[in-house]
Image 1 (cartoon, one colour):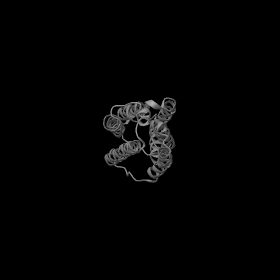
Image 2 (cartoon, rainbow, N blue to C red; image 1 turned 30 degrees about the vertical axis):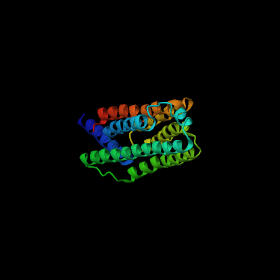
Image 3 (cartoon, rainbow, N blue to C red; image 1 turned 90 degrees about the vertical axis):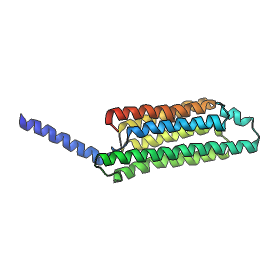
Length: 210
């Protein structure tokens, strides 16, 4: 009986070692919460200070002179870029902190593969959004942000917690739905990048801690 118990414990230990060697397990649930808060803050900045309280930003831009419309478009892109930069820094900060707490190395072959698989769709989406800006297709910018970000999460999900994969699927669905109602892009931004991240972060924190 004792031999059977020891064998089961050995199998569990081996399985844990194999999982840790093939998946990046230092992602922090708290980073998801703070990323969500940052995204909502960015949307509020856009709503109050760039769009003058207009939810339907495509109609708002349509009624502006070309020069002013061009300036405001780049203000929105700058706002989104700042949100993205802060989100990346928050994810790195909390993940490095979690790795140190667990006595693990943050920068490993697995974390590098995760980062590469994450960045390829993100970079592609960034270039595509830039093209949309140049062609004045602003109504598709938020859907593209959500869809390419979702694809990045799905792509990276195989190297970390499975919840990342499902978050990516939800982001893609949110982006596709928002493409049908482009006038409500700001609301979908808050839902996709804000609320979904907060829910995901709280769930991860409850399940895995930190």
